[in-house]
Length: 109
Image (cartoon, rainbow, N blue to C red; front, side, top):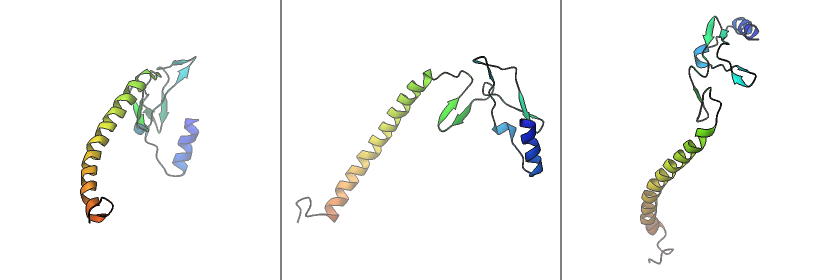
């Protein structure tokens, strides 16, 4: 399948970059590290050799999702602290500006 893809890419004068790709071979439910894939006579690195980040998540050869809960909790707490810091500054600015723009709303004449 990869040879056909390689032929099509050379036909349309395009080039694949194996260094930006990752491969993962699973046999009988386990990661097979012996299998290698090549494109344009260059070996595609496996996920165990070089983990890949996609959509904000890191993928490696462990195929386990146990660390994701702790990572999600840590990311959520960091994000909430950042929002809290920004929110306090925005609210103080909003209060000062809104009394200028809407004096009757706050009971000022």
